Length: 347
Image 1 (spheres, rainbow, N blue to C red):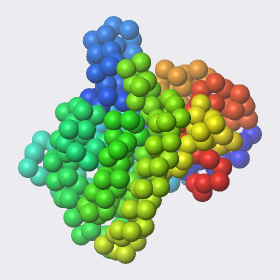
Image 2: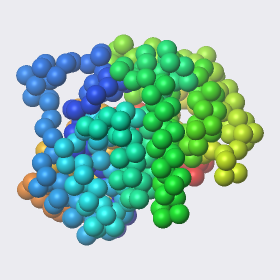
Image 3: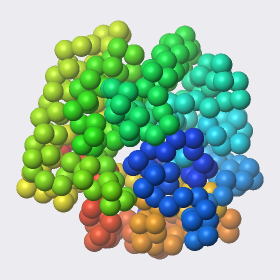
Image 4: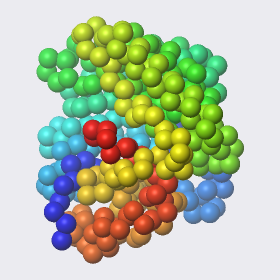
């Protein structure tokens, strides 16, 4: 039996519900199938019901999980039981780690940012705002339905509340992006913007090419793209060192590491899985997932069970999960995973 080292769980509460259509999103991209097609094919997932939410959160807390993430696919603030999610975090002493698309949807459209900030900040370890350009044109081309001006306004307002409440609980804020050709040249300006707005961190990931239309966007397609990425990495790090945050600290840059030009098919040769035996994912039907890989692809790693018929402890202590932890490096999906990091980098 594995020695449990789990510290975080993600609940995919509402992956098929979002108010934007980002091109890199596996569920809401304009390059993917529309909702009616996915429904006919049986791929449209429901909203996680409140009873399942309650039971999973309570069991995870009892197992020693310290941090919880609401849906990272779809917009979590659109989950009808999100307020209950927050109440459970407060009751059980769980830290909230939130990724939002930056629109802060709420019925009261004039006070949406402040309302959510005052609910979220006291409970959160980190809030990530998805952001994919320093110019209106690029930002809108990647995040269809978004507005850069509104993103900037919302970030300013959210961070103002974060600063106001910082003495009670410091909630770090992260500008989160996807690294791709469309926004590569704008990354230095995005780093500068993050510093100006008061973000603590810029975090990104190399593009998952869910659709053939996205394949030209990958920075791992050819040496020239990878070399330009490596140059941009150094430029961004220089900016972060030169322009300090108002606190005097240096903006943190996560996953800004050079690509190995001789191994572009492997983002991190020798890099370990950052998730197995550390994090858990539960889909809205209760299915246990092992990582954040695209849903249809991660199914290839096995069927580990469902929280409607099994407990978390039974699944993570099971033979099938232990076998994956031991042998994941033989799996094609794991070999190609872009979430691993080079061994020399600290986690």
